[in-house]
Image (cartoon, rainbow over all chains, first blue to last red; front, side, top):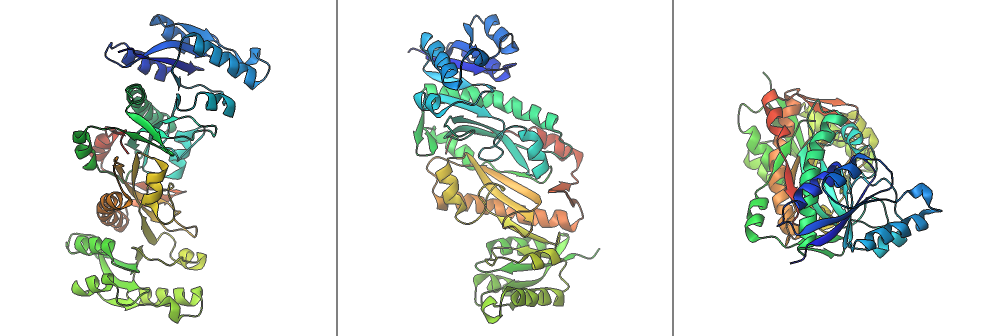
Length: 221
Length: 221
């Protein structure tokens, strides 16, 4: 069966891109990365893609006259590689409703919090200030509103006393590297369906039985 | 050492009250229930307290002229039993800033969501509509704003596909019955300190090492 063609959009070091590269290196993984596009030249993520033999492109937002022109160039580059699913991976440009609607239910993002809590930037700092006992990360379909959209997968971890934004961020990042490939796999296999605001995932029954037993209690933080 | 005297405020069946009664039945538990107060007569929670030989009182909000008068009667009943920590357990009256400030850092509540997400009523229904993959429950110190205040303990569980508000609520309730006694224990032992918006809990180092490894990933829901 043909593997789903991914386009990964980055702006920086691309650590989540690397997790997708590693997952797609397995021929049994149901998706492959067709192109990696950065809006900034010379970032580490582009080097990661090149090292893996993946086509890359730079679409510089500053070289385009306005956001729609920039986004048209993005769609053109994605279409040139027959991309069927767009994966935002540390892509630091806000996207217009026009672009998001064009790619509706074919564009996903990863965010370092348990959405809907802690949208936006500096999540780990705000998590620590708030005193919550759990945080995590979320892969979701993209909607026009920032960090909104049907959730595909979440991963949760306890906040520990003594955590700093850096220590907490490092533990969350390790979970991001697990849930992004999982979310891509579920979408590529057609097992994740958008129903209203939610994503229904077809799960083997055995997984359910195990999940129903899962309880994590955390008084630290 | 003297056990911390609790006053538990209820309005109904008192299932979280029962969890506290069961915990306090152990002489090693660092708190005891000095009085159970309901704003409604003849509720099941009062019968639970009586069955355990715990003093009860009914302070009927409708019998008082305004909220401050009602709350003065509550404080009077609590003081009559030398209560040092007030535990809200399904108490369905909003409290004024005056009452909450009087009991500041000596009054805790349990809420069936991972606060700050899903404040208010009908949490499980709203959790399912939102498509989040985790929910849970929270014990927090009470502030004047509803469902706000420094968090003492949270418990998290995965949302499962096929969950209804009832099935999800039943699993969350089982976790509530574990975290409320734990939160009372930590407060009674002086191990939970309010620092800014957060609660810092003194944890044995071994517990930290275990918690740092905890990751739960959920694509169901």
